[in-house]
Image (cartoon, rainbow over all chains, first blue to last red; front, side, top):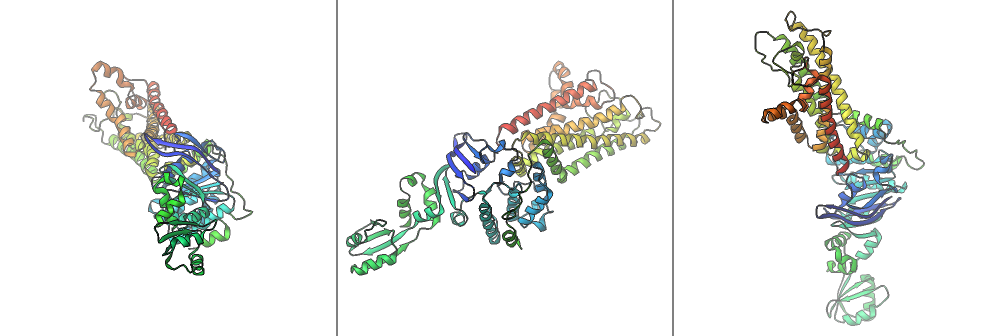
Length: 309
Length: 286
């Protein structure tokens, strides 16, 4: 469990993280999303106590990170890929980390096997590819059998097989009751792994939602062109259906599928000359969210709809 | 690759009903052990230690074998050795100022190298209290450099005895102050390595740290000679390398410190450097 309260970080007069409130709960995968420079890495560094917050606080399992007697047992983290001395081998690196917590050598071998690094375990890390570096970072994160696993851009540099591996691994960790947090700037990728989404932009919280809710909010609608648009509007009226009129002929209908609209129109002999489902991808919804943070609070659906047109 | 298979079969961390990994609290002894592993798993540690040993042993032995009482002392003694008179110990320690640079670099790389590579993030995530890491690094650098360079100093002296056989300046280990001087060289170099650890942690850049160590140890005494004479005479015995030099000089120079006072002053500088490093490590973002 990670709890951030009013978490703020300023460098000079630049506010990188701005009064962030969020919770990463056990048993689920929380995606931490934002464009580059949104403050994701800074937030993660504050969670690990590497950077001190300017204001506010963040706790891991109820305590500030540096108050834990065995911090690697509380949270395991992958920060920027190369937080490793390139002159050391994977085994040397992991052994040194394990020794700070009296973790047995067998556990080092275990995480090396888990990360698929067996064949390169004794090679210098400097010769590793980006993907191998990521695997080593994930191995290090799991070393202390932590309650919380936090990964910064874990699939960067991984091949498709590696991406699948990370996805399965994170799902498994969450199913074991651990809290999993992963950051990304790619919505498409995160929505496949995460249950919960925390979206930030310029250090501020934009959305704290679930993937399902965001999909629902982002659903585009159906564009309808008809000579009798106003009559159709009346016919389509229902509790969950919203109809927006853009001109005397053009409508955008949400809450009803193209098939249903077509059937209603036929039943009442309303001539249609266009009936087009307008998709809004999660990626578009995300970009729209992060493009203008202020607009989000007042009407997210409205803004996604505009993006769709 | 069987990565995915291994993952789904066995479970990421052992599957349901798994035994949890035994994880103990972070203690200073464990941090020390971890830092020792880090120290011996880096090639730069071995290269600098070997080079320090080689420079001391080789230069000292060669100086003794090429010594001639008539010739002007061409090799130049290590800094801090008072007067122009040469003795068997200062000949044996001819390589000391080179060795001091090498072990200074060793110390700087131990700390600043972690910042330049990003390793520091892994280190401080494992030991968020931070200070134990600095103490452990200092202890490891100091003790290992002391042991290796003391061996080098004794080796240089003992080999050099054959070269100086029959010369008037020849000494044996039984003579007054010889063992103290040779051990003192090891102590001085151990402290130089610790000084490097502190400066490296303070500066956070290998190049900057090395420049700072070289500057303080080698250049400061030279620069200070620009000061008015009366100031220079009062201050110069207290410069780090000059005070440290009193530890391994066989004969106390008239205007210098005693070996005990010299080591205390140099250790004081090292403590000051560690205090500054500790403050920066604890206070500022990694």
